Amino acid sequence: MASNPISPTVDFDQDGVQHGFLRLPYSHDESAWGSIMIPVTVVKNGSGPTAVLTGANHGDEYEGAIALYDLASRIDPQDVTGRIIIVPAFNYPAFLNKSRTSPIDGGNLNRTFPGRADGTVTEKIADFFQNQILARADYVLDIHSGGKTLDFVPFAAAHFLSDQSQQARCVEAMKAFNAPYSLMLLEIDSVGMYDTAAENLGLVFVSTELGGGGSSSARTVGIARKGIENFLKHAEILPGELEIGPTINLDMPDNRCYVSCDTPGLIEYKVDLGATVEEGQLIAVVHEITRTGRPPALYFAGISGIFTGRHFPGMIGMGDIVAVIAVPV
Image 1: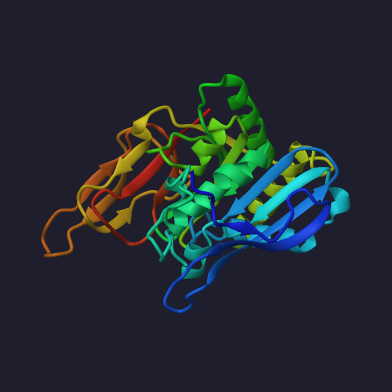
Image 2 (image 1 turned 120 degrees about the horizontal axis):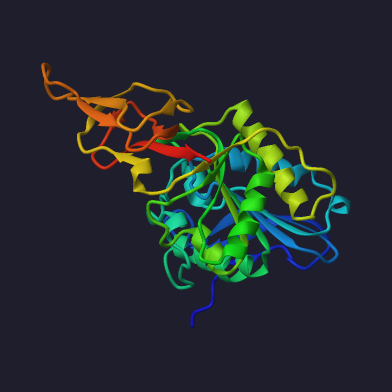
């Protein structure tokens, strides 16, 4: 079996705060013996649980990266019981390129697990996390938002799992994050996801979607900051009481929650995110753009609930998501 070429410049077992890199050798035209240097911070104080915190799993999602770079710059190891591993820009090549996927190999890191030690750049990153990072973890928080092509109401998410005890622990951690919405998320496709890799190891895993559009806001970054601290307090890695405000609990019972586009064109939404919609309600129309005089295609809610996610750009393509609708619990 091939060994992974990534070498950390930090010692995961050393007490204190260490700022360093996950060094991935990468030979290319601009640097024959170059390396990709993925920033990492390790904070450790004695024995206790380990939390892994990641942002920019997709490189055009910024709330996690902002909140985690900030946390790494100010955390005091004396406040910590156990260990925190912080990777603000998980798919670093994509992050630098301001894109969802890696410009090097086209890899979508969140569809690449468990990866390959002798594979592409993205596969090597996934393999290292699978075998070196997740293997050390008890709690995992992966902060997403919609990137350039999606927008969401800000939610924390857990998944339905076959292990009911593990699912309950994930749900409690999701509630502790305390986003404005808390969602039992039905994935379109969970194969190769970081989420699935962590859950298959029996870990407590929480994900988020905190907005979108390829930028961030004071509100969504504030949700990320508070949620991270709550998550670490819930894990008993940081001291203090959780800061808990109201949240709306949501469920996704089946695929009626997703509305997909089969008529590309110019999309016009008839309702805004967060609105309550009824099954059969018109939520969007898509206008033909190759000629005038054509009636638009109509898209309707497949289930009653909260309008939770939508396509972000004004132009929509075949197969793109028109809407995500989740049901209040």
